[in-house]
Length: 473
Image (cartoon, rainbow, N blue to C red; front, side, top):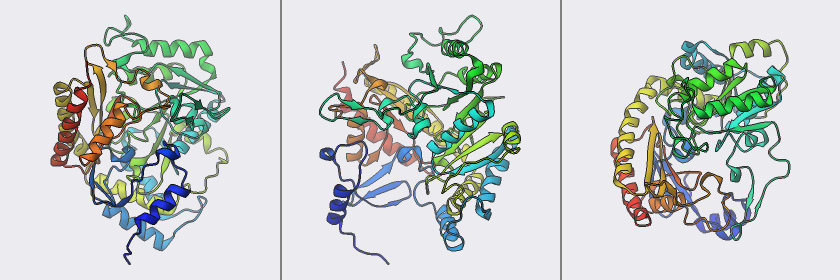
């Protein structure tokens, strides 16, 4: 039965009782959503927003996909909830679809486990890697984001996203004491646009073709002792920070980890399930497979909270010798598993990687046109339907608007950060874009996006970026 929503009362409850993130109480912004449909979010005031970023690069199948919604309703009516010790048809079918239909041809995967979030998946990965190897250290990279729980935050290198308190009125930032924990070592990011080592690609290659960032990473590993390193964790294409590595990077990284007997944890929470034009981003590289892969979001288009971990056959054989004592109340939840199975079945039937590749090529063309037309767009790049661009004050010198760039603490006045300005102006014109760093904008629409909708999204970006151009040198 439909009921009339009292939005004034909703505002009162939300503003008074909910603990909001990313804003102090005095900054509270009331953004009430009436409903969603297709690729659109409908606000309570009647405004209709095209989702051009899949929320947090998560709503891959648009909103309320009928196949997924029907599966959720069936599982709710049939089972509801049982704990992970019980087997349900939904969990078994979801596991089979991922292990056999998506990964079966690659020959490395041994077992999958479903948990609740990408952060929890990475916590599982770190624990398993350390336990299997008996080693304490994890290698991570500059600007990485792997989650917000303790271990995942340790691998995340955007400081402000580690449960910090950032003052809106001063430069005060408060980190959680002893959080994140130790055992994480940081190496350079493959960020060719602003290389932290001062190099320019491809002149950064050593005589043997090794990238400078790989060489420095290997030097650090040798310095702390490869025998102390359990794993190297990476996203292939940075989801939050909009960094795409040069083509040699992932193959060289994988060769290095194998050379030193270090496990490679491939975080595919954002890049997986078709987002990059393959089922998983590692498949873009011939002969490259991970030891552990973490998954989430795209498994069911975020219809319900979900994360997961896939371990190699070697690791699976070792774990099978023991009782794996790991509790998680919602792990393998029947209703969530049903949504995963339905989403994967749909994506298989539609050959989603091919769909994404085709639409992604069109999006890439449009983003490069923006780069050519606007003074404020320093670099636009994309792979599949995962794209974005760097916003600069001076295109020739690459000077950013926010000098701290990826080291920003998000204290003080952030209203003039390019990501804030562009996001707000786009919303006023009916389009949602996203980002998590000051000078970068993410464009990552749902797989259900149409060319006409891409045109509309780019048209709005074109209008908004013309306004930012006026602020450039």
